[in-house]
Length: 317
Image (cartoon, one colour):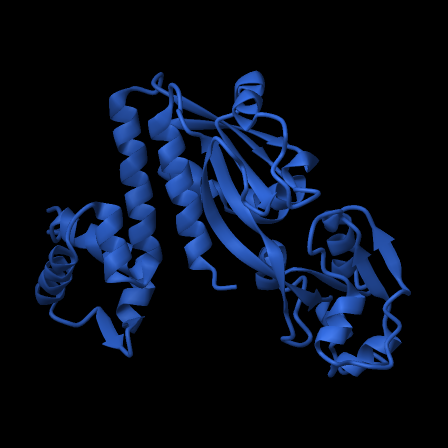
């Protein structure tokens, strides 16, 4: 005998609220009113016989049972999406061509991309790493961005810059800040000079990411910002690419000042840590850029951009 399940709409409403930690954002995603979302959650709680969500100081808090069930519920919706894809026919696929900075692709996008593929197995991705996706100055480019999209058959770009891209549809993905990053081995008491306070940096090699962009974080500026003395900001190892610098930090070769968002997966995996929570907000941010007039695959591009924004919202920087 098949197990009786609550209505799919109620489960979808709960999953969206739990993912966004917001009734308003869940309502916007599902294209219903906030009241409708509240009604569905109340129905589901009545059906199950216990509370799923607590509202405290405008914060959404999930019950222990709700937290435990959420991953399986997400997997279930992914499987439903795949089943619908199979029923529509495996030959019906969409394709997106994405151009992105290599560091963003390797450190932020690719580790998360399996979640998009599970949700939208009917969408193929062509990803091209391009160092030109990092603005070297704050002035809008003279080249027509529209022409760039056409000549390279690009659907979406993720750029790191000031956000001034004339003739394009531009949406901010997230702002960033730079933080000190290092291997957990450097903060361990087993180290001869464990990193306990900023002044301890004088005993460690400083790693420098020399990628060229406006507002680039430097150890000198960071030390001045936080009033730290006695540390030589010029010494250490210099790299022309953030991924190389981050690998050196993971390897325990020193302490890197770099964008926290790019290091998040390595932090969660225990390969990197933040020795002290002293950040430096950066002028630039990550932006999703696409042509004003999208041709051909608006649905696939829209689904991808919505997923990007959802993933960005899951992280608080």
